[in-house]
Amino acid sequence: MPKYLLTGGAGFIGSNLVRHILATRPDVELVNLDALTYAGSLANLQDVLSHPRHHFIHGDITDRALVRQWLAGVDCVLHLAAESHVDRSILDASAFIRTNVEGTQILLDAAREVRVRRFLHVSTDEVYGSLGAEGRFTESTPLAPNSPYAASKAAAELLARAAFHTHGLPVLITRCGNNYGPHQHPEKFIPLVISNALSGQAIPVYGTGANVRNWIHVHDHAAGLLAVLDHGEPGMAYNLSSDDELDNLTLARKLLSIAGAPESLLRFVPDRPGHDFRYSLDSSLARTRLSWSPRIALAEGLESTVAWYRDHSEWIRQVRNPEFNRYYQSQYASRLEHAAKTV
Ligand code: NAD
Ligand code: DAU
Image (cartoon, rainbow, N blue to C red; front, top):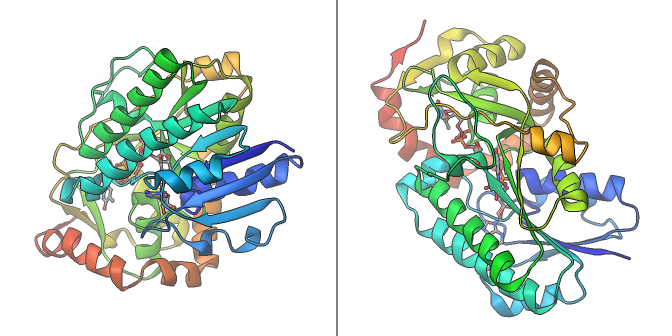
């Protein structure tokens, strides 16, 4: 039975990927290694925790002995564990260096020792930096990360690239755009807008809301990751994206309309420092070489996502816990105090 080690499987994308693998690969045994930081939760895995082919391990990827122990007999590594929020990296970058950079090197070292068949390193479009109104990132666009988060992800994927070139580790790199869907932490824009809208709270929009993101449903991303794992060429990087680009203000208005909440909740707040203006990915390489393409249209995906959060108020309550409220206060209290209403 093929054995995968997935890191970060209690987080947003990881937990969706766990479900996708269990549902579509009946022969795969899955070891899910996650430190359960503020961003990870067993509540994201409730329905699969006792699945016979899913083994959840509470552990840190920077623990070399533990990583070695769980890599024994593993065929493929799917490395998603990371500190993932740009705003938190601006407040304090240290955990980003530890997990994203040091943790990745520890995994690469251990994967090399046991000679895994594939090492899928999940990176991000943020490594490319920022675009103006025109153009798209291709896989050959030079890396130019702007936030501490993006810089730590660029460092991680360069280490993965080096492991391929120097040691022959069969590394595959993916760079995806902004994901949305069920189980996303409400520190991120879409679940923040939805959960604030559902509870009638003000919604912070950075700057003028003109920044553009290239959105993809997390289920499409999960399918893309497996396409790269199966058919990607070691040493290559693959962009994964939909064609759905939207500025933040338009996106927030759409979500409010779906949630049946008033636009008067929107507030323009002081901008994120160094805020990348636009991301847009050319994913024709993955689409032509790997026969993958995203299937979920944005309108449909946003509807189902709002419905998911509406139906999971207990999940929202658990994640928006006192620790989250402390972060929320430090990130938004003074911004919201001086905010301008958008309508
Ligand atoms: P997330 O923050 O929701 O989840 C991260 C998970 O990693 C959590 O479960 C957390 O507990 C775990 N983790 C953190 N530090 C760890 C450590 N030291 N050891 C073990 N586990 C640890 O993140 P996400 O949005 O699901 O992103 C997953 C991956 O995909 C990340 O590598 C991220 O950079 C990448 N990515 C995310 C997006 C997006 O839009 N969310 C887009 C492209 C790429
Ligand atoms: O592009 C891929 C990246 O997408 C991933 O690598 C990151 O892990 C993921 O967090 C995401 O990064 P962003 O910074 O783009 O996502 P976030 O949800 O934080 O913000 C989306 C946009 O919304 C961005 O332009 C900032 C804006 N925003 C965000 C927050 C939290 C606001 O206007 N207000 C907010 O309160």
